[in-house]
Amino acid sequence: MPEAQAVRDKDARQKNALQQPAGQPIVPDAFEPVAIAFVCNWCTYTAADLAGTSRLTYPDNVRLVRVMCTGMVDTQYVIKAFLEGADAVLVSGCHPGDCHYINGNYKARRRIKLLKQILPRFGIETQRLRLTWIGASDGIEFARTMIRFVDEIKQMGPCQTRLQSVI
Amino acid sequence: MMSFLPTKDRTITQTLQDFLAQVLETKAADAVLVPSRVTGDAAVKPCLICHPDQLHHTVPLGPGFFVNAGTMVSRLSWKLSGKKTAVWLRPCEIKAFVELTKLKQGDRDEVIILGMDCPMALSRKDYDTWVQSRSPAEVGPGLPDPEEWIRNRYEHPGKPIDGFTPARACQVCETPYPVNADVSVQLFGADLDQGIVLQADTRKGEDFLEGLHLPPGKKPEGRNTLMADIQALHEKAFQKMETEIQDQTGTMDKLNHFFSACINCHNCRSVCPVCYCRECVFNTDVFVHPPFQYLQWADKWGRVSMPFDTIFFHLTRMAHMGLTCVGCGQCTRACPANIPVADLFITVARKAQAAFDYKPGADDAEPLPLSVFQEKEFADIVGMGGSHDT
Ligand code: SF4
Ligand code: SF4
Ligand code: FES
Figure 1 (tube, rainbow over the protein chains, first blue to last red):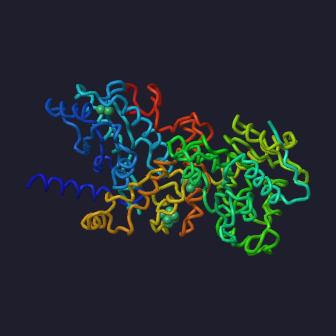
Figure 2: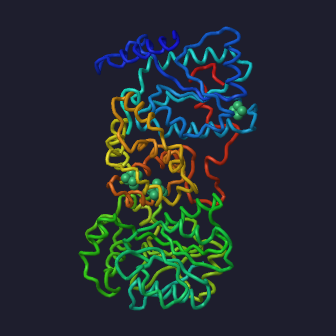
């Protein structure tokens, strides 16, 4: 099971990265962040699919969660992702005006706005939570965004919730 | 329109009891909802009263605040009863009720909101001490006469009352005077030996006062200055609280400490007047985790404390109702673990509300922030933070 082995190796690498003595800078290369991306079925997921069929690569640190619309991403999903140790969360859907449920993405924008008032108060930096619009035909944009997103998180280092369990 | 309620050698409590009796006798309302001693002891809860002979149990103004009556008004108005009810509310109770009407869990049509300049309230523990420290005098056994409390509160606002400091939530309250009532009961700045001023704030309030044929009143002198002073004081207290909360909860580790004694009883949610869901997601099977899940968590971090999902619960509650938090402080009062839940919720909520330019309960026509949207707004939070963003 080479795939399982690869996952285990990666986990071991992550553990190593996390076990660096406190106070020392995290070596960005050694740290493999986990980013959860809630992507809407009609736009960003399709874009991810397109990126795949176009053989574009993007970091496997991003774990996609397909949802029907960003309008269904309740704040609790984002909170849970962080509390489970995600280093970053992305919500991505259709451009304004393109939502297949008319206005789900506008609602998502308000929820993310709200979460950005709450989570940074407890030390989850605002850059760890992103909202983007990536249309169905934007395969390239999708891959580019993911690369940039992961890059940024690597620079930031692990989220506190990864290093420490939350009660 | 303004009316005057002369005290005529009565205590404030008696004056208000007689006023409420008049409301019932003149049929200005079919019933009144007003804080009352439930069984004659010191526990004070909103009681719905139809018969004037029951009013001697009532405590319209006092430091006991066991229940946010906003929820109770919603229970009395979620559908039509064909009766008119006058509800005697603290400012944060009005706000809570108004928020619930926006969720169609109540309706203003059949209620007349009598909003009071707030007498402030004590924490549960301080309330018990206050009760024990006073002799059960005129008001009856089990409850001390709140007259001294009332006098101190309205005549020297900002000072400890009867040697007690009101609950934190009250100390930081932005509007300790009624906003969005039908009739506001004005005590700040009033000469309480003379009487109390009632002001109609709506058409309904005007009709109500007219029917009572009270002498005309005029705005208590110095009320506005006094209000401004109180607000400044409360703003300062809020800033102090915010700094403290930031110190106590600024990281996840600190947040763990803050809630370490939490036993997941969810009392804070049950008493919250604006935790409006019929069934909370935290009561559903979603949170009946399979045993292996716990073991997986324990393996991931080395251990997992049980019951789990404590912070998850609090952060989710904050995200779900924070924009409508009315700052009543009931969550702290209900907490068996003595966690100052309201200090945290009020701090976070006030800042979040400001980001949406929203004041819960202030305006019936202002929709809940998460129930609406604008096509163009909050562009700054979209994208990766670079120039190519859309
Ligand atoms: S969160 Fe606490 S302070 Fe805010 S409305 Fe609910 S019970 Fe009152
Ligand atoms: S009332 Fe206190 S102990 Fe109960 S869930 Fe709320 S914070 Fe925890
Ligand atoms: S369907 Fe894509 S955001 Fe609503």
